[in-house]
Length: 171
Ligand SMILES: [Zn+2]
Ligand SMILES: [Zn+2]
Image (tube, rainbow, N blue to C red):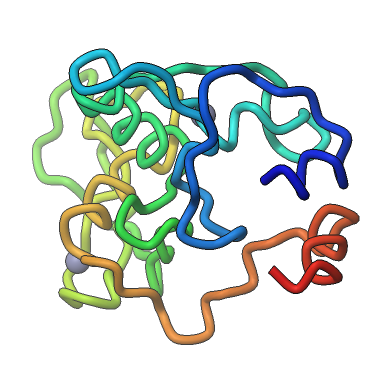
């Protein structure tokens, strides 16, 4: 990380360095503070610049009370087990719901899971806008996939400047 910090000329965010599983690990916080009950880590995605898909700010989250785990898995769709994005459904379909209530959807989109082969509702039954559209799928994936990815689902890194510099460093 010291190498990476000098290569990318980033400022130290505070806390102490925490090793990821590998440089492409999207889950593990690179910086942590405190211990045990007070241990917090910085979301490695939010801290990236907006041009790289982040928010450019330090979001410290509790490691002990699963705030960190919940945030990275269900705000970003990154698996705690693999450090990679959850694989998407292998296909989609729209199913009619019988006798929906007024505030409910009359049809619902389902995604097919590559692990359990089931059709999983990927929307809530209430007909309203949600903050994180993929939440239902990610919740299913977090419990069902157990680290499994669809074969070939591995092109989730932007081939940008940061990526090529990491490649050059052979990390
Ligand atoms: Zn985040
Ligand atoms: Zn499944």
